[in-house]
Amino acid sequence: MDQQRSSVTSGMTMATSGERLNLGFVLDGQPSRQTSSSPHHSHPTIPTFPRLPATNMPTPAPAAAQTPKPHENFDTPLLAHSVPIRNIPPTCPFDKILLDFLSDRRARAADGASSDTLVGPAYPSVASLLNPERSIYAHPLSKVFTDILARFPDLSALPEQVAVLYIMFLIMRWQISPTLENYERLPEWVTPRPSQLFTPHPAWVDHLPWPRMRDRMVSLYPEIS
Image (cartoon, rainbow, N blue to C red; front, side):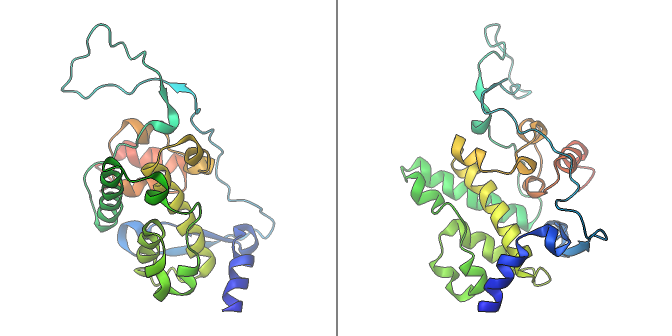
């Protein structure tokens, strides 16, 4: 157990391990890792994209079946953190797990459940990765992702599991409770792109860590399915 906890501490720094996560497992269940050949890099070579401003932004265009009225000239301001991601119905088992869980949390919110009850602690339960049998005691928001990770045995390195768990947890936490606080906790490179907010696409795309790849996947769908 002490050795695993030490692995968490030393492995959380991706630059130290030289490993980069390939999230292809969300599509076909075949995870893989790529090892950087350079021992001196400190961060993945991912272009920096500014997050959408947490201030006013244009209202998305209405659905095609609707005809905008003259006074509805898309001038109503929206807050970036309150604009939901536009997903289509499930395209794979991973999508179904994500969308069913999100739908359940939103239904509970509509019934009056508090935000604390819906999203739980501010951080996921790493203890559930160290002791899977204790995941039954974790908050559902942590448990749904530890259960997902348990289905991919090739993703066995604890630092990788912690990294994937943490990012998925933050994305889902904001989707359930789209507050400014939860939005600002998202790393810039997973903050939803305009394409994700205005163009319908599969839910698995939202968990890819590369902004340009998400844009590309959204623009190419359904050719990529």
